[in-house]
Image (cartoon, rainbow, N blue to C red; front, side, top):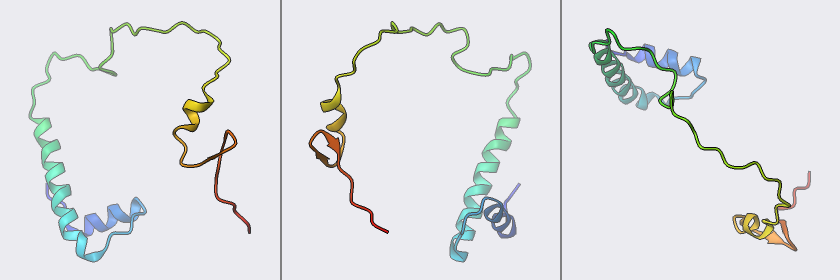
Length: 96
């Protein structure tokens, strides 16, 4: 199945995405390739293969101990901030 320009325009409208007119042809080509790849998946023989909800099925996940702490990670957290002031996040002043 190939995706034409009108289908791309409809998809863009439904997704509320503004697509410039000059990009519609390239987007139609890309979407056609994606649909073609999905159609290839239909050719795969899945007879006898049980459906999966997750790749982690049957896997036991390790769990950490649930220990209450006082945190004391202020410096670590603030090291990620672009700007700090006296131990707090600093943000630009907003006045309306």
